[in-house]
Length: 394
Ligand SMILES: Cc1cc2nc3c(=O)[nH]c(=O)nc-3n(C[C@H](O)[C@H](O)[C@H](O)COP(=O)(O)OP(=O)(O)OC[C@H]3O[C@@H](n4cnc5c(N)ncnc54)[C@H](O)[C@@H]3O)c2cc1C
Image (tube, rainbow, N blue to C red; front, side, top):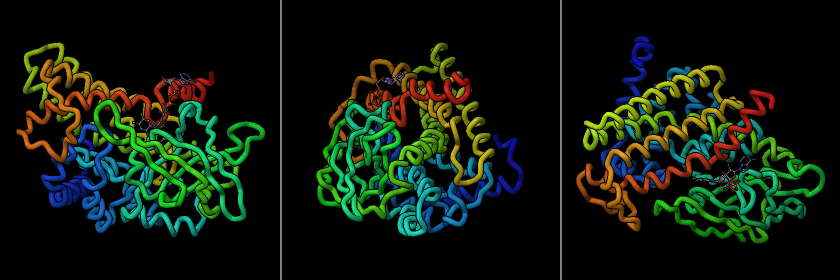
């Protein structure tokens, strides 16, 4: 990739590297390495996010007037890649990558002033309240009701699969404000404080042993109408705008590269003489190179803060497959050693083993957790449907 970089970009890359050397501590790196779920615990990343904020780099992808860096697409690419190589994912993507850009696009001046600085500074942690039991792919069937009462909505219902909901102090949610006409036309997008009376969070433990998901119950929770994003009954448009950031929001490139680097190490240590494994490794590496190229070209065709459009479905589809290929090959490379998993251990807190052994213990929970990649943010089948409709006109 260095072939593409001129002297200015190389200097920028060195500046990023030196920042990362300074702020990515060994403890933090180890905690991230041993995270087997798909989200790193906020307490692990918050100090780094604050350092980024002090440097003015917390939300590079936002427009400059809201705290973005104004970097060129190549500079943003370099930054993502270097963060990936250093092993650090972004802090609370639901805030900085999902709802942040949507508040910038649809928010009132008051909403922008209230929420954006807190996302930048890492003071708020956001969760996403879209899915409900029975309303995942068919999101428009959602039933959580918001009844108008003066200048408030009274919200009743249930959300499910709410990632990191147990850490969130705010949640953006889709609620039903009308049952008339088309289902999509009765949905409203609201920003809710998690300490609102009437909200209960209940954990769901995933098959990999991680606590990432939750159920969230709303029981007569009063939400000010001032917290509505966009117009009443027009939340579907806001929701779709947000999903394009979720699916194509460039939060993955660096992370997947870091996972691949780990895989190369693992194959080298455990299956270096297996030609089939080596061939699969090369295939994944080639897919990864191709995806990085596509990703950066998508990035260069849009302005900071703009939404990616339907290509986000293609990115989501391929990134999730590549991530699953990586963990599947890791399992095959280490063979029966992958079965030495102790599920009740919260990995990053308790393990004090040599890194090679930790890597083996982490393989199975990583594999199990990765089943979710082709489901979260909309399943692969739904992405394929979107591509068929928008690109092929089917
Ligand atoms: C790791 C993870 C994190 C998540 N985090 C959140 C979160 O923070 N907030 C949130 O709101 N939600 C979250 N979700 C929920 C996620 O958005 C839903 O799981 C997803 O949209 C699928 O919905 P579902 O689980 O109800 O499955 P269903 O919609 O019931 O789908 C079941 C199966 O049927 C297939 N299917 C359904 N409809 C069609 C169709 N029209 N054509 C072809 N096949 C179809 C699906 O592809 C799937 O294979 C998360 C999910 C995961 C796995």
